[in-house]
Length: 346
Ligand SMILES: C[S@@+](CC[C@H](N)C(=O)[O-])C[C@H]1O[C@@H](n2cnc3c(N)ncnc32)[C@H](O)[C@@H]1O
Image (cartoon, rainbow, N blue to C red):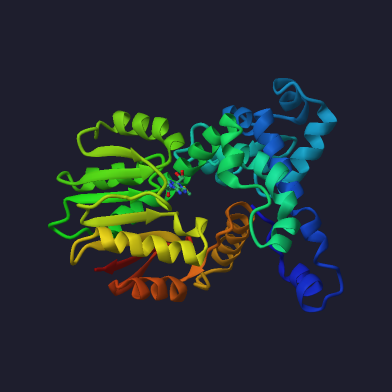
């Protein structure tokens, strides 16, 4: 957890400018590497068994005592571990989000994000100069099956976080029988909708690399009769017709405004009158919380760096909706995540 300033620190660093606040950002990325090292060493899993002293922990994870001691100091100031007398234990945050026993285990995010930090972020400067990705994300993923698998697992972790609220707030029309999940990837959103609407038939439209994980999840959830996977490129290929609704979950941020307008138009052509389009994405400029704004901004930079896309404001998205012909455009916020649900009708 990023450090939060106490009132005195806030005065010195932010209000009076006596201490150079940028010094904290020198170590922003180092915080990531520190937590990544803890994940790789298995520190959180080990401390989940019982509190340990530095030498006991070093012994159990086969690492140097001095290394573990300096790392634990940082993990404590970041809020991951707590020192009690001479032993260390996981904080409640770590227990809830960072171990194999967690319902939603964010460790996978650190594993996936490691190659992203090492290979993509260093090229932000070139991307900004160029106006698009220096390394194309899906080509990069294609060259590393291990990273591609971690990426899918991380997308599934995030999906598990957001699905309950989405499924509660998304209300499909009574006569909605066929839905296309564009860029549906791992299939978890489609599966959740099929469990809510037992008469729904879903077509997941995605590239071939997503197929194995999607089919595995569909089989595990035993919804084979409700979901089919169609492989293709939704930018250039025909997506077919016969759908009452189209879902684009975390898709528009991967594209430029021109590509999105083209895609929304293509979907409009494939929908019947009153057909529904549903966009779920991070929305820029919602100003609901400092943390949500920070995350939305950083994700936006990452999408620009790796895909040439970014997060868009509700104003931009509703303009595309209206330009494509959709009516009754509406936005619903999904918790404090920065994620919103935007619907429109043909
Ligand atoms: C960010 S993921 C979103 C996955 C899922 N909808 C979710 O929200 O977790 C974007 C998905 O779009 C797919 N995708 C991106 N560009 C595509 C294209 N041109 N044609 C087909 N699928 C594409 C990717 O393979 C990936 O599964």
